[in-house]
Image 1 (cartoon, rainbow, N blue to C red):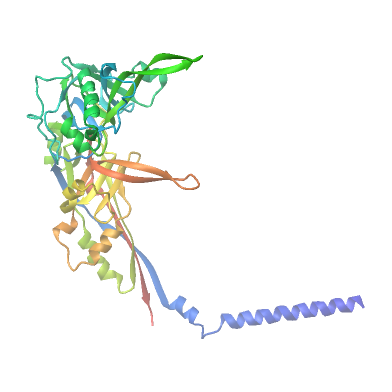
Image 2: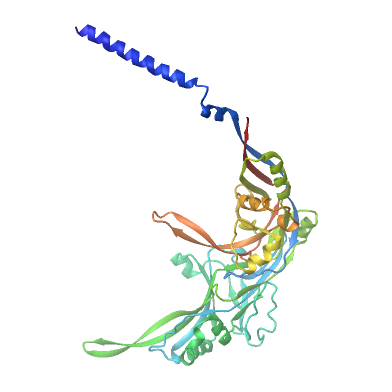
Length: 471
Protein backbone atom coordinates (compact mmCIF):
# COMPACT_ATOMS: atom_id res chain seq x y z
CA UNK A 1 0.00 0.00 0.00
CA UNK A 2 2.75 2.40 0.87
CA UNK A 3 4.64 1.49 -2.29
CA UNK A 4 1.59 2.31 -4.44
CA UNK A 5 1.09 5.72 -2.80
CA UNK A 6 4.74 6.54 -3.30
CA UNK A 7 4.52 5.77 -7.02
CA UNK A 8 1.41 7.94 -7.37
CA UNK A 9 3.16 10.91 -5.68
CA UNK A 10 6.14 10.57 -8.01
CA UNK A 11 3.87 10.53 -11.10
CA UNK A 12 2.03 13.66 -9.86
CA UNK A 13 5.29 15.53 -9.28
CA UNK A 14 6.56 14.58 -12.74
CA UNK A 15 3.32 15.82 -14.33
CA UNK A 16 3.61 19.21 -12.56
CA UNK A 17 7.23 19.65 -13.74
CA UNK A 18 6.25 18.84 -17.36
CA UNK A 19 3.48 21.46 -17.24
CA UNK A 20 5.80 24.15 -15.90
CA UNK A 21 8.41 23.46 -18.57
CA UNK A 22 5.75 23.60 -21.28
CA UNK A 23 4.57 27.03 -20.12
CA UNK A 24 8.13 28.38 -19.97
CA UNK A 25 8.91 27.03 -23.47
CA UNK A 26 5.78 28.68 -24.89
CA UNK A 27 6.62 32.02 -23.26
CA UNK A 28 10.15 32.01 -24.63
CA UNK A 29 8.92 31.45 -28.16
CA UNK A 30 6.02 33.89 -28.17
CA UNK A 31 6.68 35.96 -31.34
CA UNK A 32 4.14 38.66 -30.37
CA UNK A 33 6.15 39.95 -27.33
CA UNK A 34 6.75 43.73 -27.64
CA UNK A 35 9.40 43.54 -24.89
CA UNK A 36 11.53 41.22 -26.96
CA UNK A 37 11.32 43.50 -30.02
CA UNK A 38 12.35 46.54 -27.97
CA UNK A 39 15.44 44.87 -26.60
CA UNK A 40 16.57 43.59 -29.95
CA UNK A 41 15.48 46.44 -32.19
CA UNK A 42 16.83 49.53 -30.31
CA UNK A 43 20.51 50.35 -29.92
CA UNK A 44 21.98 52.41 -27.05
CA UNK A 45 25.56 53.69 -27.05
CA UNK A 46 27.78 55.70 -24.75
CA UNK A 47 30.17 57.85 -26.79
CA UNK A 48 33.45 59.00 -25.24
CA UNK A 49 35.34 61.71 -27.11
CA UNK A 50 38.71 62.87 -25.75
CA UNK A 51 40.31 64.29 -28.89
CA UNK A 52 39.85 67.99 -28.05
CA UNK A 53 42.75 70.34 -27.36
CA UNK A 54 43.27 73.46 -25.24
CA UNK A 55 45.30 76.51 -26.26
CA UNK A 56 46.38 79.52 -24.25
CA UNK A 57 49.11 81.85 -23.02
CA UNK A 58 50.39 83.71 -19.95
CA UNK A 59 48.83 87.07 -19.00
CA UNK A 60 50.50 89.47 -16.54
CA UNK A 61 48.29 90.59 -13.64
CA UNK A 62 50.11 93.28 -11.66
CA UNK A 63 47.16 94.51 -9.59
CA UNK A 64 44.57 92.47 -7.70
CA UNK A 65 41.66 93.32 -5.47
CA UNK A 66 41.68 90.88 -2.60
CA UNK A 67 38.92 91.17 -0.04
CA UNK A 68 40.52 88.94 2.55
CA UNK A 69 41.68 89.13 6.14
CA UNK A 70 45.00 87.52 5.17
CA UNK A 71 47.92 89.93 5.56
CA UNK A 72 51.25 89.23 3.86
CA UNK A 73 54.29 90.81 5.48
CA UNK A 74 57.95 90.65 4.53
CA UNK A 75 60.47 90.55 1.69
CA UNK A 76 61.84 87.63 -0.28
CA UNK A 77 64.30 87.33 -3.13
CA UNK A 78 64.46 83.99 -4.95
CA UNK A 79 66.47 83.69 -8.15
CA UNK A 80 63.92 81.40 -9.83
CA UNK A 81 60.89 83.40 -8.68
CA UNK A 82 61.90 87.04 -8.31
CA UNK A 83 61.83 89.71 -5.60
CA UNK A 84 58.60 89.92 -3.63
CA UNK A 85 57.70 92.43 -0.94
CA UNK A 86 54.46 93.08 0.88
CA UNK A 87 53.39 95.73 3.41
CA UNK A 88 49.76 96.19 4.41
CA UNK A 89 47.22 98.81 5.43
CA UNK A 90 44.18 97.93 7.49
CA UNK A 91 41.18 99.29 9.29
CA UNK A 92 39.91 97.66 12.50
CA UNK A 93 36.57 96.37 13.70
CA UNK A 94 35.92 97.75 17.23
CA UNK A 95 34.42 95.87 20.12
CA UNK A 96 30.91 97.09 20.90
CA UNK A 97 31.72 97.55 24.59
CA UNK A 98 34.80 98.61 26.55
CA UNK A 99 35.22 97.62 30.20
CA UNK A 100 34.91 100.78 32.31
CA UNK A 101 33.50 99.43 35.60
CA UNK A 102 36.23 99.89 38.16
CA UNK A 103 38.60 101.09 35.44
CA UNK A 104 39.86 104.64 35.05
CA UNK A 105 41.89 106.07 32.22
CA UNK A 106 45.02 105.88 34.37
CA UNK A 107 44.51 102.13 34.87
CA UNK A 108 45.46 101.41 31.27
CA UNK A 109 48.93 99.85 31.44
CA UNK A 110 49.82 99.18 27.81
CA UNK A 111 48.57 98.51 24.28
CA UNK A 112 49.82 95.77 21.97
CA UNK A 113 49.09 94.73 18.40
CA UNK A 114 49.31 90.96 17.92
CA UNK A 115 49.62 89.28 14.51
CA UNK A 116 48.96 85.53 14.47
CA UNK A 117 50.08 82.94 11.93
CA UNK A 118 50.09 79.16 11.91
CA UNK A 119 53.37 77.20 12.13
CA UNK A 120 54.92 76.98 8.70
CA UNK A 121 52.74 79.76 7.25
CA UNK A 122 55.70 81.55 5.69
CA UNK A 123 58.04 81.24 2.74
CA UNK A 124 61.77 81.64 3.34
CA UNK A 125 64.14 81.38 6.26
CA UNK A 126 62.44 81.07 9.66
CA UNK A 127 65.52 82.39 11.49
CA UNK A 128 66.04 85.47 9.33
CA UNK A 129 65.56 88.62 11.47
CA UNK A 130 63.05 90.94 9.86
CA UNK A 131 61.90 94.41 10.87
CA UNK A 132 58.82 96.59 10.43
CA UNK A 133 57.35 99.86 11.65
CA UNK A 134 53.76 100.85 12.37
CA UNK A 135 52.18 104.16 11.37
CA UNK A 136 48.68 105.43 12.14
CA UNK A 137 46.73 106.35 9.01
CA UNK A 138 45.85 110.00 8.68
CA UNK A 139 42.78 109.52 6.49
CA UNK A 140 40.33 106.81 5.55
CA UNK A 141 41.30 104.16 3.04
CA UNK A 142 39.87 104.31 -0.44
CA UNK A 143 37.50 101.71 -1.80
CA UNK A 144 37.88 99.72 -3.92
CA UNK A 145 41.54 99.25 -3.05
CA UNK A 146 44.11 97.20 -4.95
CA UNK A 147 47.51 95.61 -4.38
CA UNK A 148 49.33 98.46 -6.17
CA UNK A 149 47.92 101.00 -3.68
CA UNK A 150 50.33 103.84 -2.86
CA UNK A 151 50.15 104.74 0.87
CA UNK A 152 51.83 108.13 0.33
CA UNK A 153 49.47 110.79 1.63
CA UNK A 154 47.76 108.35 3.98
CA UNK A 155 50.36 108.46 6.79
CA UNK A 156 52.96 110.80 8.28
CA UNK A 157 56.52 109.47 8.12
CA UNK A 158 57.40 111.59 11.17
CA UNK A 159 54.62 110.03 13.27
CA UNK A 160 55.85 106.47 13.73
CA UNK A 161 54.33 104.46 16.58
CA UNK A 162 57.40 102.19 16.64
CA UNK A 163 60.43 104.51 16.34
CA UNK A 164 62.82 101.54 16.41
CA UNK A 165 62.55 98.60 14.02
CA UNK A 166 60.34 95.89 15.48
CA UNK A 167 62.47 92.79 14.91
CA UNK A 168 60.92 89.34 14.60
CA UNK A 169 61.68 85.85 13.30
CA UNK A 170 59.39 82.94 12.41
CA UNK A 171 60.86 80.28 14.68
CA UNK A 172 58.89 79.03 17.68
CA UNK A 173 59.17 81.39 20.62
CA UNK A 174 59.00 80.26 24.23
CA UNK A 175 55.26 80.42 24.83
CA UNK A 176 54.46 78.65 21.56
CA UNK A 177 56.94 75.82 21.95
CA UNK A 178 56.31 75.14 25.63
CA UNK A 179 52.52 75.28 25.41
CA UNK A 180 52.44 73.60 21.98
CA UNK A 181 50.07 76.23 20.65
CA UNK A 182 48.68 75.96 17.14
CA UNK A 183 49.81 79.48 16.25
CA UNK A 184 52.79 81.82 16.37
CA UNK A 185 52.64 85.48 17.39
CA UNK A 186 54.32 88.65 16.19
CA UNK A 187 53.55 91.50 18.56
CA UNK A 188 54.44 95.15 18.89
CA UNK A 189 53.79 97.71 21.60
CA UNK A 190 51.70 100.71 20.59
CA UNK A 191 51.59 104.07 22.38
CA UNK A 192 49.71 103.95 25.68
CA UNK A 193 48.06 107.22 24.70
CA UNK A 194 46.23 105.38 21.90
CA UNK A 195 44.61 103.10 24.50
CA UNK A 196 43.59 106.10 26.57
CA UNK A 197 42.20 107.78 23.47
CA UNK A 198 39.99 104.73 22.87
CA UNK A 199 38.81 104.86 26.48
CA UNK A 200 37.92 108.57 26.31
CA UNK A 201 36.08 108.15 23.01
CA UNK A 202 34.01 105.28 24.39
CA UNK A 203 33.05 107.32 27.46
CA UNK A 204 32.19 110.46 25.49
CA UNK A 205 30.88 109.02 22.18
CA UNK A 206 29.95 105.32 22.49
CA UNK A 207 28.21 105.46 19.08
CA UNK A 208 31.69 105.63 17.51
CA UNK A 209 32.00 101.91 18.31
CA UNK A 210 28.64 100.97 16.79
CA UNK A 211 29.77 100.40 13.17
CA UNK A 212 33.07 99.91 11.31
CA UNK A 213 32.48 103.04 9.23
CA UNK A 214 31.84 105.22 12.29
CA UNK A 215 34.96 103.87 13.96
CA UNK A 216 37.06 104.41 10.79
CA UNK A 217 36.18 108.12 10.91
CA UNK A 218 37.62 108.22 14.43
CA UNK A 219 40.57 105.88 13.78
CA UNK A 220 41.33 105.24 10.06
CA UNK A 221 43.68 102.32 10.76
CA UNK A 222 47.36 101.38 10.52
CA UNK A 223 50.09 101.06 7.93
CA UNK A 224 52.59 98.25 8.63
CA UNK A 225 55.77 98.80 6.63
CA UNK A 226 58.78 96.54 6.05
CA UNK A 227 61.96 98.32 7.13
CA UNK A 228 64.62 95.71 7.73
CA UNK A 229 65.74 92.35 6.33
CA UNK A 230 64.95 90.17 3.34
CA UNK A 231 64.42 86.43 3.21
CA UNK A 232 60.88 85.67 4.39
CA UNK A 233 57.24 86.57 3.79
CA UNK A 234 54.74 85.58 6.48
CA UNK A 235 51.04 84.82 6.01
CA UNK A 236 49.22 86.50 8.92
CA UNK A 237 45.73 85.10 9.41
CA UNK A 238 44.54 87.23 12.35
CA UNK A 239 45.45 90.66 13.72
CA UNK A 240 44.07 92.30 16.85
CA UNK A 241 44.86 95.07 19.31
CA UNK A 242 44.76 94.32 23.04
CA UNK A 243 44.45 96.70 25.97
CA UNK A 244 46.12 95.72 29.26
CA UNK A 245 44.67 97.42 32.36
CA UNK A 246 43.97 97.25 36.08
CA UNK A 247 40.43 96.72 37.32
CA UNK A 248 39.43 97.76 40.85
CA UNK A 249 36.84 95.73 42.71
CA UNK A 250 35.65 95.05 46.26
CA UNK A 251 35.00 91.81 48.09
CA UNK A 252 33.75 90.99 51.58
CA UNK A 253 35.48 88.73 54.11
CA UNK A 254 33.95 88.25 57.57
CA UNK A 255 31.71 91.28 57.04
CA UNK A 256 34.75 93.36 56.15
CA UNK A 257 34.85 95.05 52.73
CA UNK A 258 38.27 94.94 51.10
CA UNK A 259 39.69 96.34 47.90
CA UNK A 260 41.39 94.26 45.23
CA UNK A 261 42.93 94.83 41.84
CA UNK A 262 42.64 92.49 38.87
CA UNK A 263 45.00 92.67 35.92
CA UNK A 264 42.96 92.25 32.75
CA UNK A 265 43.53 92.10 29.03
CA UNK A 266 40.83 92.64 26.41
CA UNK A 267 40.92 92.44 22.61
CA UNK A 268 39.11 95.61 21.59
CA UNK A 269 40.10 95.87 17.91
CA UNK A 270 40.42 93.19 15.24
CA UNK A 271 40.75 92.59 11.52
CA UNK A 272 37.53 91.05 10.21
CA UNK A 273 35.89 90.58 6.78
CA UNK A 274 33.69 93.64 7.36
CA UNK A 275 36.55 96.16 7.24
CA UNK A 276 39.12 97.15 4.59
CA UNK A 277 42.50 95.46 4.69
CA UNK A 278 44.90 95.46 1.76
CA UNK A 279 48.31 93.97 0.97
CA UNK A 280 50.60 96.37 -0.87
CA UNK A 281 52.45 93.91 -3.09
CA UNK A 282 55.43 94.41 -5.37
CA UNK A 283 56.79 91.55 -7.48
CA UNK A 284 59.87 92.01 -9.66
CA UNK A 285 59.58 88.74 -11.55
CA UNK A 286 62.74 86.78 -12.34
CA UNK A 287 64.18 86.87 -15.83
CA UNK A 288 63.83 83.10 -16.11
CA UNK A 289 60.05 83.23 -15.55
CA UNK A 290 59.65 86.06 -18.03
CA UNK A 291 61.71 84.12 -20.59
CA UNK A 292 59.52 81.04 -20.09
CA UNK A 293 56.38 83.09 -20.73
CA UNK A 294 57.94 84.82 -23.75
CA UNK A 295 58.87 81.40 -25.18
CA UNK A 296 55.30 80.13 -25.04
CA UNK A 297 55.07 78.52 -21.62
CA UNK A 298 51.72 79.06 -19.90
CA UNK A 299 52.53 80.13 -16.34
CA UNK A 300 50.66 80.67 -13.11
CA UNK A 301 52.60 82.99 -10.79
CA UNK A 302 51.22 84.66 -7.66
CA UNK A 303 50.77 87.07 -6.08
CA UNK A 304 50.50 89.70 -8.86
CA UNK A 305 52.34 87.56 -11.40
CA UNK A 306 50.85 85.58 -14.27
CA UNK A 307 47.38 84.21 -14.93
CA UNK A 308 46.62 81.95 -17.89
CA UNK A 309 44.17 82.81 -20.67
CA UNK A 310 42.83 79.87 -22.64
CA UNK A 311 40.36 79.18 -25.44
CA UNK A 312 38.09 76.30 -24.55
CA UNK A 313 36.95 74.17 -27.54
CA UNK A 314 33.22 74.53 -26.79
CA UNK A 315 32.23 75.16 -30.41
CA UNK A 316 34.10 72.08 -31.61
CA UNK A 317 32.47 69.95 -28.90
CA UNK A 318 29.00 71.19 -29.82
CA UNK A 319 29.55 70.73 -33.56
CA UNK A 320 30.69 67.15 -33.13
CA UNK A 321 27.86 66.39 -30.72
CA UNK A 322 25.20 67.71 -33.10
CA UNK A 323 26.70 65.85 -36.06
CA UNK A 324 26.92 62.47 -34.34
CA UNK A 325 24.36 62.35 -31.55
CA UNK A 326 21.09 62.38 -33.50
CA UNK A 327 17.71 63.29 -32.04
CA UNK A 328 17.79 60.98 -29.01
CA UNK A 329 20.92 61.82 -27.02
CA UNK A 330 21.88 62.99 -23.54
CA UNK A 331 25.13 64.70 -22.49
CA UNK A 332 26.60 62.78 -19.57
CA UNK A 333 29.86 64.46 -18.53
CA UNK A 334 32.46 67.01 -19.54
CA UNK A 335 35.73 67.14 -17.62
CA UNK A 336 39.18 68.62 -18.04
CA UNK A 337 42.51 67.61 -16.50
CA UNK A 338 45.43 70.03 -16.84
CA UNK A 339 48.88 68.55 -16.11
CA UNK A 340 51.35 70.73 -14.23
CA UNK A 341 55.10 71.15 -14.36
CA UNK A 342 56.53 72.33 -11.06
CA UNK A 343 59.32 74.91 -11.31
CA UNK A 344 62.48 74.02 -9.40
CA UNK A 345 63.51 76.62 -6.82
CA UNK A 346 65.43 76.96 -3.54
CA UNK A 347 62.46 78.16 -1.45
CA UNK A 348 60.04 75.25 -2.00
CA UNK A 349 57.62 77.53 -3.84
CA UNK A 350 54.81 75.24 -5.03
CA UNK A 351 51.94 75.49 -7.53
CA UNK A 352 48.86 77.38 -6.30
CA UNK A 353 46.78 75.23 -3.97
CA UNK A 354 43.58 76.35 -5.73
CA UNK A 355 42.77 77.85 -9.11
CA UNK A 356 39.67 79.46 -10.57
CA UNK A 357 38.56 78.73 -14.14
CA UNK A 358 36.35 81.71 -15.02
CA UNK A 359 35.10 83.34 -18.20
CA UNK A 360 37.50 86.19 -18.92
CA UNK A 361 34.62 88.60 -19.50
CA UNK A 362 33.34 87.90 -15.97
CA UNK A 363 36.61 87.74 -14.02
CA UNK A 364 36.66 91.35 -12.78
CA UNK A 365 33.00 91.21 -11.81
CA UNK A 366 33.55 87.88 -10.04
CA UNK A 367 36.08 89.31 -7.59
CA UNK A 368 34.46 92.73 -7.17
CA UNK A 369 31.15 91.13 -6.17
CA UNK A 370 32.68 88.55 -3.80
CA UNK A 371 31.26 85.74 -5.90
CA UNK A 372 31.47 81.99 -5.33
CA UNK A 373 31.95 79.57 -8.23
CA UNK A 374 28.57 78.84 -9.86
CA UNK A 375 29.85 75.82 -11.87
CA UNK A 376 28.41 77.39 -15.02
CA UNK A 377 30.77 80.24 -15.79
CA UNK A 378 33.27 79.72 -12.96
CA UNK A 379 34.84 76.55 -11.57
CA UNK A 380 37.28 75.63 -8.79
CA UNK A 381 40.05 73.04 -8.82
CA UNK A 382 42.52 71.96 -6.14
CA UNK A 383 46.09 71.01 -6.93
CA UNK A 384 46.73 67.28 -6.90
CA UNK A 385 50.34 67.17 -5.71
CA UNK A 386 50.57 63.39 -6.15
CA UNK A 387 49.60 63.39 -9.83
CA UNK A 388 50.76 66.96 -10.56
CA UNK A 389 47.53 68.21 -12.09
CA UNK A 390 44.33 70.22 -11.71
CA UNK A 391 41.05 68.43 -12.43
CA UNK A 392 37.75 70.12 -13.35
CA UNK A 393 35.28 67.27 -13.11
CA UNK A 394 31.94 68.94 -13.84
CA UNK A 395 31.91 71.28 -16.83
CA UNK A 396 28.61 69.80 -18.02
CA UNK A 397 26.43 72.78 -16.91
CA UNK A 398 28.63 75.10 -18.97
CA UNK A 399 28.36 73.09 -22.19
CA UNK A 400 24.59 72.67 -21.74
CA UNK A 401 24.31 76.44 -21.48
CA UNK A 402 26.39 76.92 -24.62
CA UNK A 403 24.34 74.29 -26.45
CA UNK A 404 21.26 76.50 -26.15
CA UNK A 405 22.96 79.39 -27.99
CA UNK A 406 22.58 79.83 -31.73
CA UNK A 407 26.26 80.71 -32.04
CA UNK A 408 29.23 81.25 -29.76
CA UNK A 409 31.38 84.36 -29.48
CA UNK A 410 34.92 84.81 -28.16
CA UNK A 411 33.44 85.84 -24.79
CA UNK A 412 31.73 82.45 -24.54
CA UNK A 413 34.90 80.38 -24.92
CA UNK A 414 37.73 82.54 -23.49
CA UNK A 415 38.61 81.70 -19.89
CA UNK A 416 41.12 82.97 -17.33
CA UNK A 417 42.85 80.56 -14.97
CA UNK A 418 43.60 82.49 -11.77
CA UNK A 419 45.48 81.36 -8.62
CA UNK A 420 43.14 81.94 -5.68
CA UNK A 421 42.85 81.74 -1.91
CA UNK A 422 39.63 80.24 -0.58
CA UNK A 423 37.86 80.44 2.76
CA UNK A 424 35.45 77.74 3.85
CA UNK A 425 33.17 76.57 6.63
CA UNK A 426 32.53 73.03 7.78
CA UNK A 427 29.18 71.78 9.04
CA UNK A 428 28.15 68.33 10.22
CA UNK A 429 24.90 66.44 9.73
CA UNK A 430 22.98 64.49 12.38
CA UNK A 431 25.48 61.62 12.14
CA UNK A 432 28.55 63.84 12.39
CA UNK A 433 29.48 63.64 8.71
CA UNK A 434 31.29 66.87 7.74
CA UNK A 435 30.44 68.98 4.70
CA UNK A 436 32.78 71.78 3.59
CA UNK A 437 31.28 74.92 2.02
CA UNK A 438 33.38 77.48 0.18
CA UNK A 439 32.48 80.93 1.53
CA UNK A 440 35.05 83.16 -0.18
CA UNK A 441 37.32 83.20 -3.22
CA UNK A 442 40.01 85.86 -3.71
CA UNK A 443 43.12 86.30 -5.87
CA UNK A 444 46.00 84.51 -4.17
CA UNK A 445 47.91 86.77 -1.75
CA UNK A 446 48.73 84.27 1.00
CA UNK A 447 52.25 83.66 -0.30
CA UNK A 448 54.33 82.99 -3.41
CA UNK A 449 53.23 80.25 -5.82
CA UNK A 450 54.22 79.27 -9.35
CA UNK A 451 53.95 76.50 -11.96
CA UNK A 452 53.76 75.86 -15.69
CA UNK A 453 50.55 74.44 -17.18
CA UNK A 454 51.03 71.72 -19.81
CA UNK A 455 48.16 72.85 -22.00
CA UNK A 456 49.26 70.66 -24.91
CA UNK A 457 48.77 67.59 -22.68
CA UNK A 458 45.39 68.64 -21.31
CA UNK A 459 42.77 65.88 -21.35
CA UNK A 460 39.24 67.05 -22.20
CA UNK A 461 36.78 64.17 -21.89
CA UNK A 462 33.25 64.50 -23.32
CA UNK A 463 30.71 61.69 -22.95
CA UNK A 464 27.14 61.36 -24.12
CA UNK A 465 24.58 58.61 -24.62
CA UNK A 466 22.57 58.17 -27.79
CA UNK A 467 19.85 55.76 -28.86
CA UNK A 468 18.91 54.65 -32.35
CA UNK A 469 15.67 52.86 -33.25
CA UNK A 470 15.51 50.22 -36.00
CA UNK A 471 12.03 49.96 -37.50
